[in-house]
Length: 402
Image (cartoon, rainbow, N blue to C red; front, side, top):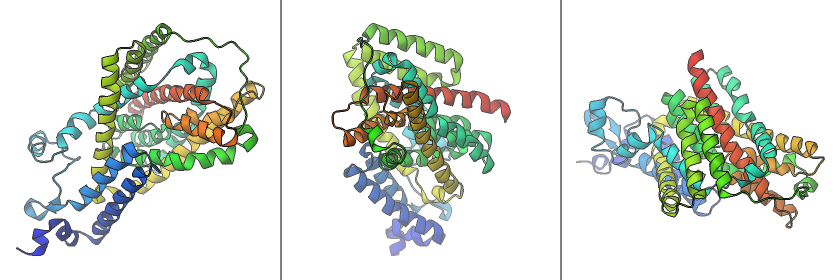
């Protein structure tokens, strides 16, 4: 027995192509960096810490398999044969979670239930026109990226899945890529979640570039008496909106059901279910989402040239979404005779509640007395709804034109 056989993680570095070996080393280093940045809260720790560990472990823990092949005993996302899948589920320790939760979109629905529980739809019912208008403009990235992706050579399904990165909604991207581009599911989802955490760093610069200081500091004068939205009204909205959207877009029914059910449970004050969805489902699903995305970052997968194209499309989609949202904010500002803060537009990008908090933070830096979070959350929740609607349209229409 030689050292290469004894320490197989190192030995396999010399048994693969140089590009793959270098890729593994780079991804191990990147995984360590993601953990550090997540721990410092520079990036989203809920995703980045487990993702970084998974990325480092899957690229370090490569061993010699049968017939001289190299691989790992963590996960194999490409296996599809039933007999082979049953065998590998008894070996790869994360394979059952991937097969039972990722490949059918269940994990996306669990996250959506948790998001529904933590969302307050009062701002949506209080400011429906403002919230929905901003959210619609924030879909610029999701709409405009599609023709760009097709021009780059992607099929209609792949282009739609890549364009949905512009929603900044990870579960939405995961669900769409499974439905329309299963072969690119792994790289599209990885790119989406890497960029979602980078929203923390990039979006504040877009806000500062497009919204001058005096507008960021602007307060909103309430011209009408504000009424409390009762839990009964919210529950009625949840069931009607869920039913109507499921009627219109049945292919996205799992997402609509998950989100509105979670929100209704919150408003019904079903404490046990509320704790289950928020403290167990949401955090468990987020943890395994981050971990699985990390172990899917295999060097061979990410060295595919298509990943570079997806990285470019991801930047375009999220950048255009932010610009579109702020444009929507300016339009509402004009309609309301300048009694609005355009910074709220960034919250139309449906990364709940990250973009809403980014809007409030940007305003707070200029004027500590201004509080716009209620408007931002209205746009944020509407962003989830418009993103799900657009996803439903893509999943419904794309198969008819392929």
